[in-house]
Length: 134
Image (cartoon, rainbow, N blue to C red):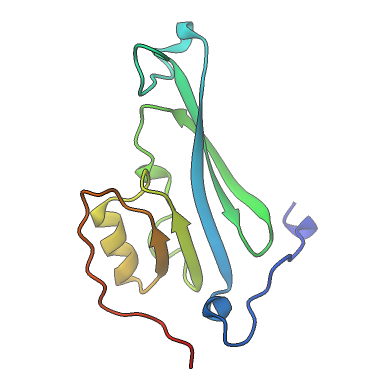
């Protein structure tokens, strides 16, 4: 399958994305499953949907391709499905607030990897550096 991928985007020139070899996008989608599966796939919303599964996917924004899919119970935290820090070198990692923990963000920063993550209101970020054209 890797040989069949088509490069659909390519960072160019002085754009902010030019320094990255790929845009790695992580997200998940939940869906209800039969109530009989609640022990195998416990859901977050126990009264309305006691059984739910989540498909957690990673994709390449440049190749317009899904690179990994994981199935997990909806009630399970997604952090263990994230790529290990140091494996996204040269990429911009995009994720939503369901994914990261402070320890993961700190480890990613230690490897000098770039990321944009939508955090919950409980986080109080401090911007220490910014990229500017030129």
